[in-house]
Amino acid sequence: MTTFVLVHGGWHGAWCWRRVTPLLTGHDVHCPTLTGGGDRAHLARPDTGLADHVADVVAVLELDDLRDVVLVGHSSGGAVITGVAQRCPERLRELVYLDAFVPAPGQSVFDLLPAVLRERFLGLVDGSGRIVLDWEAAMDGWALTAAADRDWVRPRLRPFPVGAVRDPLPLDPVPELPRHYIHCTVKPGGDSFAGFADAARTDPAWRFDELETGHDPMVTTPAALAAVLSAERQQIHFADAPGPLASGR
Image (cartoon, rainbow, N blue to C red; front, top):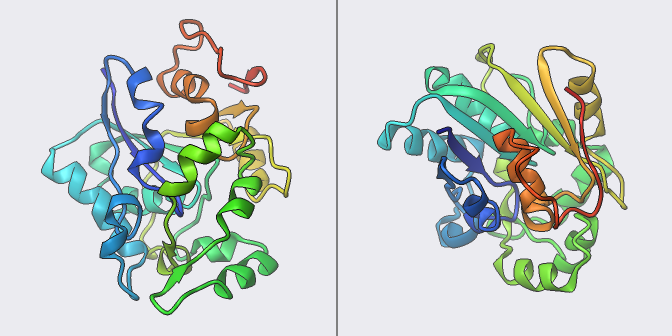
């Protein structure tokens, strides 16, 4: 049995893993909602930031006494899991970056974004310090094309605290842990994650996989994602996958 902790990205919540968790049969799966997201949207403050989100996950690890954890971060959740690794590496087995940013110590997600996208997000910050997106445009960018998927996701999205992507990680070193990058290749509006994927693909220290789907594979291809996470590629029928699963190594 593997212990998974699945950390969502911006504008999402623990709800986004709902199609994946039943497929991780026999494993211990935890899905925290970060402060200001999902069912904890009402807890957002103007100063909610990356340190709060790291603390959210560290609290789950400590209070449930989780060890040997495969820690998965989606999108901006890559910064969160990196910060968690700085805090409590002794509880972790592997870091999994799911179509995610991979910041270095002292970097923020904003540091890794193209300037035009960073300025766009800053222009969408409301008086409560949250980035408020046009949900239809956002789902287009995430390649959520199926009407049923959009209808499920739309009412669950919430504005996201800007501090989570503006605040830098501490300067503390990130311990050497096994790392796995999962790249989603369908990006109609451009791919902010291609550079991280290319670096992981060519670095023998990383495990690397690709999924031929959009930015939210937990919604669009949950069986394929569960297979990659559990490494049971031959035992799961990819009926929900729009294309082949490619494994780099």
